[in-house]
Image (tube, rainbow, N blue to C red; front, side):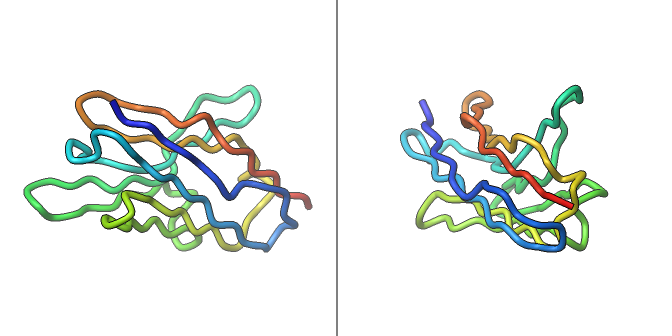
Length: 117
């Protein structure tokens, strides 16, 4: 089992920044991917960014909407993944969910990000 604790959401004006954190505990040795999805009202949940670890090398993938503005990083010692979000836009408003793949996928409880215009 993997437990996830998210933090860092909030209300910010357009152009501002936020950093989301997701700390994993439990069976962290089996984690091979960590990242973030988001879901806006009335829309499907979509990938924002994810780090996958394959044969000891990490690969980070970003949604087109996140490229150039968001940065995903991972602190292996803390089993934590961070999503630094800069130049936020109102369309980034959504519930953001931490996503981890270990023996199976795990989801965080979600943290709200609201960007005002």
